[in-house]
Image 1 (cartoon, rainbow, N blue to C red):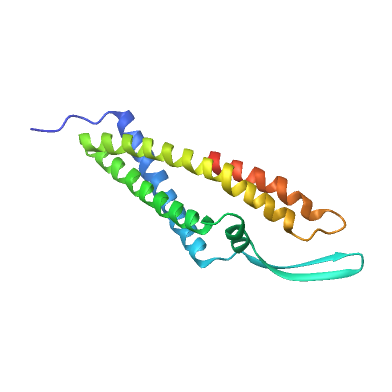
Image 2 (cartoon, helix red, strand yellow):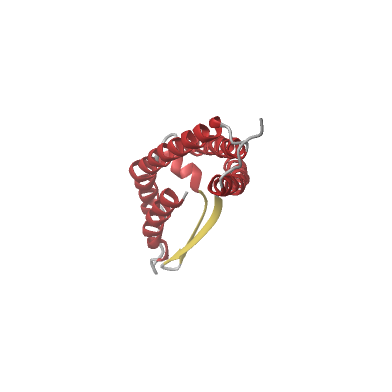
Length: 165
């Protein structure tokens, strides 16, 4: 017995899931590698009243001091994100095969992704953002106030990250 023709909407959904899931998977792997590599340190020199202050400033290390478990959150979030992308791709394959499990995997992926986003938003809003703002206040300030904008920029970064990722 031949399988029924696949509805165009199912085909479009499956192809979209494959393309987006594949791109997100590649980005997730690169993001996880970047997190493990830890490339967040820089040398900062600030002049204030004729005096220069130079220090090595590691953002992840400072965040870990302010919000214990931050590095674990980044690593765990990266791992969970990769698993969700693989699940999205698996659901797309099931949809292309017109298998019932493809629909259930895709639906499960959507619900788990929503839950993941809510948990991530909560962590960023209630833990990471206040810690990053405390960290930005602790940075030595320059006379022109260039570093004062770190706090507002950090807040917008966390809101953007939580909503769009």
